[in-house]
Length: 113
Image (cartoon, rainbow, N blue to C red; front, side, top):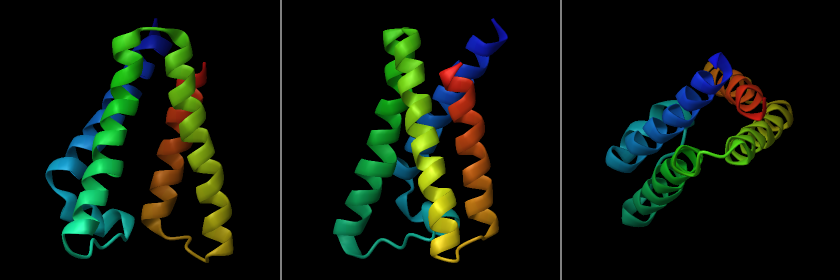
């Protein structure tokens, strides 16, 4: 029961991240380091960090299947692994990357349980 609640919280957190990116694309600059250039850059943030995250978070809630939660967890763990490697290779061990990595690992583990 507690795990399911935490999984729902992780899915909702994913959706909230998506809505922030969709509605306020310039707000991600401070946390992600991404700076949209012109309309094309803003569209990319709205679509990928916005709509894609909304869909990824909403799918498990709508499907209500354990496999959907696991899929989202696997996605988070893949992002975490890539981020961890990239932080070392790209010399980008900064606070926002550390926070993102921690959230991705925690959400990933919760969602695959």
